[in-house]
Image (cartoon, rainbow, N blue to C red; front, side):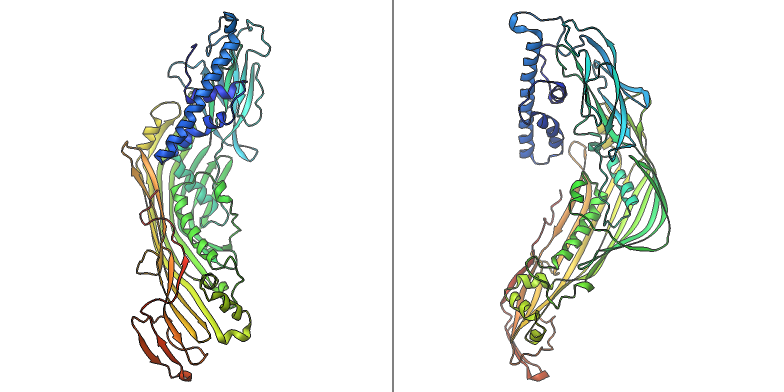
Length: 582
């Protein structure tokens, strides 16, 4: 093995077990860049990450060569012992076993094309995370020929409880980095989110690739070498579910949302260290949603398209409610924010005949079973949201109108109105083919077989918004026409989508779409009035040419010139692209 060049995976195993001083960021690059390269869609960014990884691997190989030279005393013309680098020396053999089933293990030295990773399912709580125990055991060894203290032994890394050197055998705890999605303030009940989330993750190959696996390496006079063994901890999962009915959320500007549900059915099972027992009989329920912390979604980690589709819609409507308050001014006294609300209703169907991920007997791999898995959503959105504060913060005469409205005695000389009515609908269909038992683990073909599973996913939703806006200051009266920044016929619109596509190599890729058209207000009519009392002219009237009209109320005379807009206000900026699938 002398002179053998390590690849990226081998360099990581060596770096985790070596005592050699290492350059800054080398270990971090070896750990983080491989999964980042696999997930990266930009060719330029992927190349940059690959170049960083290649440099870290080159550094690791140089350090290992230095380590071997020191151990073998090559500078003085001969080896201190007859051990070969990376091969058994005083430590002949060791294993990592599933502490709950000794038939599940991996053995070092690893035979050609043999398994190197023990996959464990975690269900016991440890530090708030699902955990499992691995037994690390030296099965054959000799006295060190150099008489070096502390060898032979095992050098563990990245275990949850203890990473001290193991002279003979010991049990160590592993925890899964798996994180459940944030649950507070969500339209779906927590148990439904858990079931939908796990179902979506079950057929994603990235689920089974941990970024920093626990590692054990042989610690000998020639160093730890690079041919160690790894443990991949994943959450234990066993689920059955059949739920149908409706759930909803009502979003307000001045108070917390309210949640409603009318569901029938049940969910039973276990996910990690959680037990799921959820049963409903069709009784209507309503409650106030708890506050949603801004950092929750960032902490969630990898989501699934089933959750993301609903989150995108809820986040967009929450964002609209947030726009109703100006960030740089006090609320306008006329603002009727308490009555502003948007309701999202979801008709839900969820079926999981069986979903189970467990350790495979007499094998270091896992077995995944799926049957009867299907999710359907039917979506409707309706409501009205006050946008007066936002409007006054963007309209050039808004600050003066706001100042006058702050004093009730001045209300006769100034007024303003701006609100949006939203309405929309959408649907989602998600399903996957049945799997009697799929082996996931050390074999080279499991990811390809996972990609071959029949997978149906289509989701779409469109919400339109119609805006009404007007302002008056003394004798000046502005009527506004709202239009999308992109020039659509409606005032504005939000577009959401989800789909699964096949790449050229046959792999499966899930894509999302979010596009908001933005809102521009144009003052197509400016009235100069002879009195300060409010005219009865309709706010829905927009002139197409110069006209004159006279109202019989209080002899108000008004002249309209709508050939060109007097004022243009960008109320809300567009987001995303019309065909921006990603």
